[in-house]
Amino acid sequence: MPLQTPPLRGIHDERGAKFTEFGGWDMPVEFDSIRTEHAAVRGDAGIFDVSHMGQIHVSGPDATELMQRLTSNDVSRLAVGDSQYAAITDEDGIILDDTVVYRLPGEDGETTTASRGDGDGATYLFVPNAGTDEATHERWLEYRNEWGLEATVDNRTDEYAMFAVQGPNAVGLVEDATDESVADLERFEARYATIDGVECWTARTGYTGEDGFELIVPWATAEEIWATFDCQPCGLGARDTLRIEAGLLLAGQDFDPEVDPRTPYEAGIGFTVALETEFVGRDTLTEVEAAGVAERLVGFELIDRGVPRHGYDITNAEGRVVGTVTSGTMSPTLERPIGLGYVPVEYAEPGTTLQIVVRGQSKKARVETTPFIDTV
Image (cartoon, rainbow, N blue to C red; front, side, top):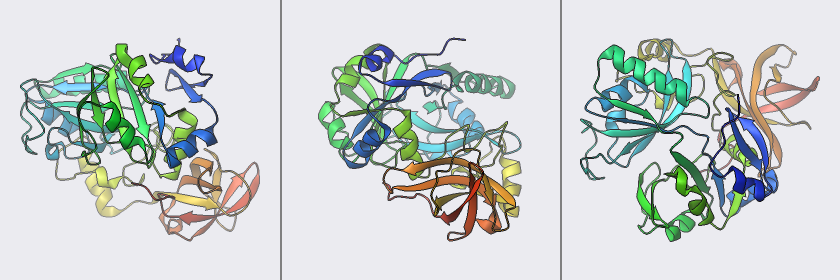
């Protein structure tokens, strides 16, 4: 099956980008170097093409109820222009995906003055991870039909590009580019703003640990919007090193419903679980929250020389395997090897000494709090 391509595939190729397959998409992994792009985001600003992320639009009289019952967080808390991070879980409380849910202005003209909890007829956009949009769309339709809810669910992944402008100077760049001011938006707030005559959903969100915006723009206008921003283009390589430093999860790597099934409590995102709401997996997660978990995702730093990678064994001092590395890198910011992995709770306290098996050799590591760096 041919790979899907973002609208700027040719532009990126002309710029000299190297490409990789990710979630069924042919995406730029780096333009100049991962270290150069990483440093730009930490010290100045960079722009990422993240058009491989899904876009699911939900509207109608029962849109709020459908979103509430299929995501773990409390959608009723959202006013127009708000967003929230949430998990999508199955009946066993296992994370199928993580997502950001945005409440959009409705077709009836409601604005950001709408109160939280006023969800009748609300409109939502949520962003599933790369390659999961079709399955997620089907899931929403199946449950909508099973529950007899009145809601329209559209997969609009092929209609919109998505860019992330991130870094200490990113807010100024986006503010200068938009006709409407966006600098007053708080984290996880959004509004429509006009860039080069194009209305773009402009959200103060991101996946790097830095301040900035994610822009959802019409597919046909992607080239001119991208060209508006005079900053370092960045690929998925730097996006990965940045998000590891920030202690953020990567779907399919730090959790996978088939290969490495995990609950939000194991994965360290229990804050996304609103047990007072009724959602698929809530009953199981209520039991998990009460009983506690046997394993937790932790951050660690290698003390010995080496670089941890996904799939490497984690052992205790006696050499017994107690866990697995899910993500790892040589941190460009800290200039130290860091990683994430699941270990039994008795090994999860910061300061605990572990061993990471790197190419057959045991390397001493220490459990650290995450994020590894100061984040916004």
